[in-house]
Every structure is written in C-alpha cells, then in structure tokens.
Length: 394
Image (cartoon, helix red, strand yellow):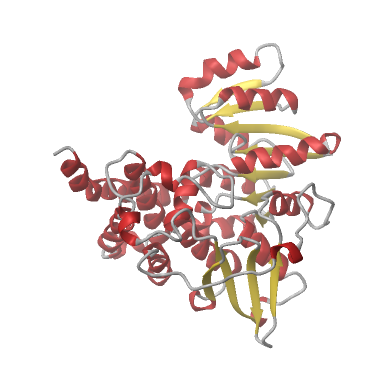
C-alpha cells in the first residue's frame, strides 16, 4: 500500500488528485491533507480518505477545522510549522500543489525524507531550482512534473537522451484576453481575468494565464527541470489546449503530447509512474476537432514572457525575485490598486532594481537566503505599486 500526502488538497490540482485516489482507495494510505481557508472541504476529504492529519495554512481557522473533524480520529493542525511537520511524516508519494512560494519549504522537506515529489508547484523550481535539484540528488528522492506542459515534455523524453534535444515547445492557451485589443486589456477587471476559456483553475493561476506570467514561470521551470539552454525553449499560443508540449530532436523529429484539457492526465501519470494505467479522462477525437492552431505570442500583449528570458540570463536569485514580485503585483491587481498591464511593469522594475545588487543575486542558494530575497522583492514590488495605489485614492 502506497503512503501518500496531498499538499494543496482543496485546490483544483488537489481535488483532481483526490478524485483519482478515491477511485482506488484500497491501494493508498493517506498520511496528510493540507489546504487553505476552505476547512469544510479539507475536513470532508480527510475524513473520507481516513487521513492521519489535516492541516490548514491559516492558524485562525484551526478551531473550525477541529470542530469539523470532531470524532473522526483525524488530527487537526494549522500554520507553517504544522505544514512542515506534515511534510516530514513518512510518505512514499507527495503531491506538491500549494500555490506560490509557500509550496517550496514543504516540498523540500518531503524530498529530504526521500519521497517521490509530484510537483505542481512551479514556483519551487522558479525560485530555487538549483536547491530543489540538489536536494533530490542528496536524498535519492524522485521529482516528477505535474504541470501539463512539463509532464508532456517528461513523457516525450522517455527513452531519449537530453543531449539529442534541439528545442522544447510549450504551448499556451492565450488566456481570457487572447483576442482582446490592448486598450481593453488595460481596463480589464480581476473577475474578467479569472475566466479561462479551456481550463477550470483557481483565481490566481487563471489570472496568471491571462497575463502569461504562468507561462513565464513554466519557461523558467523547463530550464531548471530539464537542464536545457534558454535558447532551446519556445512558446506557442495554441487556443485549443490539446497539444501540451513538443520535444524537437536534432534529427528534425518532434514528439508531441496530445490530449484533452484534463489535469488528471498529468496527475495520473505521476501517481502511477512508471506504469501507465487507465484514467477516467475524456478521449480525444481528432476528427471532431478538425484542426489545431498555433501562433507566436505577441510581445506587446504578453511582456511577462520576455521577462522570463531576462530572469534566465541574470541567473542566481533572479527567479526568486521574479516570482515574489509577480505575486505582489497580482495581489495589487486583485485588490484593484493597479491595472492588468501594470503587473508586468511592477515586476520588471523590481527585477531591474534588484539585479543591480550582485551580492543579492549571487548569494549562495539556501532556503534561508531564498526566504530573505523573497521578502526584499515583495517589499520593493509593493513600493512600485504604491504610486498607482495613491493615484487610485485620488
């Protein structure tokens, strides 16, 4: 019986993981489930799956979680320390689906136990790629990608040598505003940005999809996970979201991963790896689809993509700065303090300012230095958003 934990259990990735686990529950012993403010859902799933512990990230929700778990035998806990303790509990397989930089530390702790980490938290590799990969090697752990694009790349490389790869193409839906004029994008609201044409995701990741910050993170993640050069990575807008990635080889061949827009493809592959078992996902009928479309992204519409290559060129702590600034800019946009297109400007200003500090950029990468850099970048990004906030208040 496989022991597993799910971090970020109440989000879309977590819920899809739980769906697969429920369908074969006799094969799994659930150790820990963690979530955010939705303690009712967290408690329901923890009781149903007979988890050993349920952890909410919010200490102020602990009593609500305890009440929801009363009499079930499931332990309740809350806060960062509890998340760390849950990550240290022995497990064979751990889903890392916490959104944002908060997912880094629990993932590292799980890897230190020698677990297989199914990585849906792209920020881990963006903020601390070398640290994550070093931890994998030191503890003989295993890292499996769960982002649909990176799972597609991973599957395309089965039986292949990375040195034979010429290029990697990751696809993007284009998000909610792929057909909007720029002037309309500038006035877009958070509610409009949080509506995705193809995928059912949470608010923050859906807005990141509309701005292409999500894809920028994935570009950096591709470099860190697969060890390819930045000039070997490209992005194409693919509105149908059926081709998730392509791997091109030096003989001119390209391997494409094609499938319906259902995250259970990638989750199931990581859950059952190296086996490929049946999954309850829709089968693709290409005759009904008729055609697939691809085109290069417009740099004016998606400045976040250009910043991804800037980050890879700078190196060091640049990824940490980029992600922290992105999260702060997203907070400001959701709060109504800055416009949709202002997010990229805030991130670029923060990155350029801190990239000039070589001691910061070139600091030895550890969990502590990553946390410190993250705080510095968030504060600066908030400062850059302040003029907009002051103007809004009139």
